[in-house]
Structures are given as structure tokens and as C-alpha cells.
Image (tube, rainbow, N blue to C red):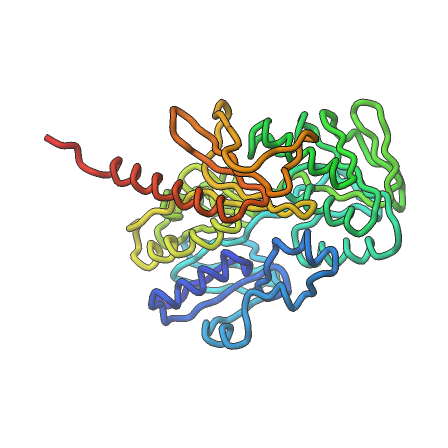
Length: 400
């Protein structure tokens, strides 16, 4: 394999490049990125960057020494338009083509948007340029902000806007935010964080439309209410960036379909990060984007699936000065109980936080920590160890 092209220059793409060099690939390495920026860290965008506590220099994921060490050709500010698997060519939007022997797909996901035209004052928050635009609008004095969607991006952005002194309302279609991720009892804790942070939470209703022609002035809800707004932040999930692969031979369904080793139906093409549907699941977690490339690159260089990736899911979120950490696999019907710390009468975490364990069939399958980092990390390690032992037992041959 003389040339490998990584399509996507964000976290997963960077880790793939690091793994290629770490695993001995010394050929031509091409990295294609739609954004004009070198890889940067996205989690701070909705938090420290938005509130001005971190500038852009704090977001960089590489420095000059590492960039030189990777010895890659960076083609930034250009979108991939197609993948000709037969001709082994990546086609770029500006007409250029890159001939390649192997491809790592790391194109991530794009923020889902509301249908129709968007007047001024409507924002999504996925990229550095999104964050720059939102920060500029938030700096123009007190604003009435409506956040559509109570997921992690919505909650973190609402928290940051409240910290900056803006009047904030979060609209969530479900009865509670984050129910799919945490289950109803712990989702109620997150709802209490909004209340404690001075943010109004409107649940159980959707958005019927936006008001305003040149600039947004309000949000109409499906229950008939109308919320005045100077800014609207849309946080309703993300769509994997696979449009450029239409017409290729790759299977696409809510991401690029891969086996457990991040390998597509073509052994010379692997996928990692938010765009990859690995072993039937697509995860938009920072940890997946950093852990999958090692496995994907190993298999790419081998030409077949030698190893698989099934890391224990882990994510975190910072909201209203609380750190929420979750590890494991929650499923509806699991029971959950607080095993350390407490939840106060207002439904929010106590002063020393808490640790909660999710159980299924008598065993712990997930843990949630709020402002309890040491206990959480200990519980996470226990969970990882138990998962590993179960995996080894499942892989062991049956005794005769």
C-alpha cells in the first residue's frame, strides 16, 4: 500500500493519521478536510470557547512538530465529492483527484437543521465557524435565546448562554431531555440542572415554525404557544456525512456500514468516528473517534479484519458547573439507583454529586457520575474489567 487517503481532518481523521505512522506506514499520506482549519477539539466549542474562557489556540489538536512528523499532504478547505472504488480515486469538489490504495473515511456528521430558509439569528453549533458566529451574536448584549433540543449540545449551549447572562429557554419534544441516553430518573436530574441554572425548560412540545423575515423574532410551538427570541440555537442532532459516497459501492444506512473492525465491504476502505456504523451501531462520542482508528488502521494495513473494536461507550458533558459522566450501555427497563452521594429535594445533584449504577439481570451495565469523578472512574474501570472478562468467556471454546 503506497498511498492512503484520509477523508476528514477532524479528531478521528487525525487519530487515523497518527495510527498509520505509529503502525509503520511510510508511504504517501493525504488528508482531505472540508473545513479550512487543521484539526481542533470540538467539545470546548459549546462551553469554554462560547463563554470566552478559551480562545482558538486552546482548541488545536496538533502542533507544528507533530504536523511535520506526520509528513502528510493536507488538502484543506475542499470537500470530497466522490469515491471511485474501482479506479481507487477520491474525487474532490474543486476537480482534483487523488489516486490512492487505501481510504479512511472520517467525514463525521453535520448538524441537523430545521427545514426551510433561516432568517438571521438562527444558529447550529457543530464547527469552529458555527461557534465563532454564535459567540459574535451573543456578544451584542442581552438576548432572548431559545434552544431547540435538550440533548447534550442543547444543554451545554443553554448553560453557556445563561452563564453569559442571557435569558434562555430550552424546548424539548420529549417529556424530559436525555431520556434515550440516561433513562427517565436520571434525565429528571438533568432537567433539574436547567431549573437550578435559571433556564426555562419547555418539554413535551415541538416547534411549529419560526417568526421573523430578515431576523428571527420568535418560535411558534406545536401546542400553540409562542416564545419571543432574538437568537435561536438548533440542537436537534446530526446527520452522518455520507452524501459524497452516493454512487459508490459502499453500503450506507445512517452512516458507512462496517464490520466490528471498522472495515467496509471493501478491505481497502475503512471508516471511523461519527460517520462510521461499526458492528451495527453509530456513536458520536469523542472516545469512539479516538479508539476506533487504531483498530481500523490495523485492519486496513493487513488487508482484512484482524481485530475488532468494541470499546465500552463513554461520554461526558459539562452543564451548569456540573460534570456529567456516563459509561456503559443503558437499555430501557434497566434499573438505576444512587450508590454514593445524593440527589437533593429539588431533584438536582447534592453538593458532593452522586454516583448511580444501572443494573440488568443482576449485574451492573452502566454507571453515571455527576460531580463525582473519582468514584465514577473507579466504577468505570470495574465495568471495563467485567466487560473484558465476559468477552473472554464468550470467546473461549466450550469445555468437552
